[in-house]
Length: 105
Image (cartoon, rainbow, N blue to C red; front, side, top):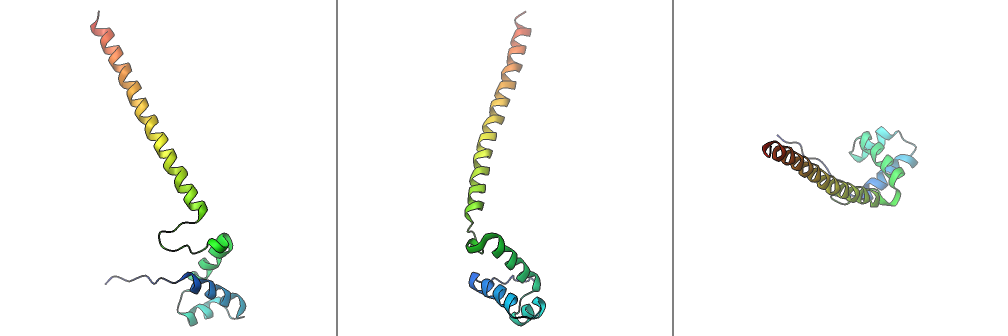
């Protein structure tokens, strides 16, 4: 039987982190009361610290930095594939030149 992964809204995550920080209870106890793992609370807190208002963008959404990184990788891949093609063409032309010089004798 496949275990389904629970998804939580950004609002729930923010409130869970805030509750964990202000309740005075251990994170494990607060997480248990909310029905989530303490690992989730720790990950959500880390994401909030690192990304602030851009934390928890949602499924398929990316932060501005992730989007820029994705765009740069795509451009790099496009440039690299063109370079590979040029190298293959160059090597192929060298082979033809050496073959034609051998047969011309």
